Length: 211
Image (cartoon, rainbow, N blue to C red; front, side):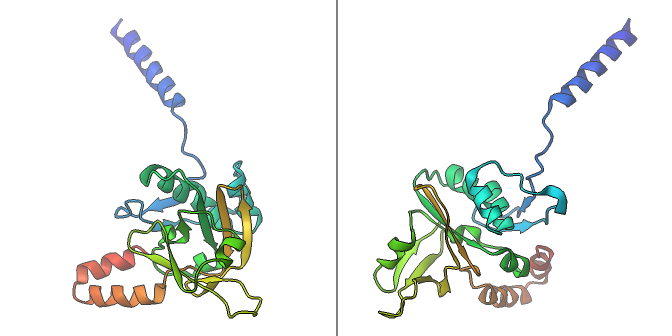
């Protein structure tokens, strides 16, 4: 009798395991333990045969425009952080760096610096005052909008970075532009980290373990 109860319990346990949903194949971002949703992450390259797995229009638009990594990062990290952690339900604009930039980038990335809490289409950026600043979702950073020379026919730039692909996605609520590089000055950050970690060998090792 006891053996039958054991078998029945084992059967229920196996059945319970089968009802637990498996991890999504989209889960390819590994958050830094110190992240706290402020934009640092390590990226794990996805298998080549994954293809376009996104059903939402935003991620699909990024993927089809060639911004494969940002389509994953936006889906898995940026939108959840902005909507849940920051509680922001208003309009946003995302400045998506290219795959080449993210492949090259040698330190943890401040992705939230690439998102601003307002709708900024091409026309709106043209009308910003000279050298004005706009907030983003990184707590210690602001972005600087630089207007081109009058009559040059050029578009505005942000932190010295020109927009590469305007309005990859625009549903009136979320706007996405493509940029050739990150707004974050990674060379300055590397120098800063090296100076800090030279005085503390333990932190120095920890920094490079994150790359």
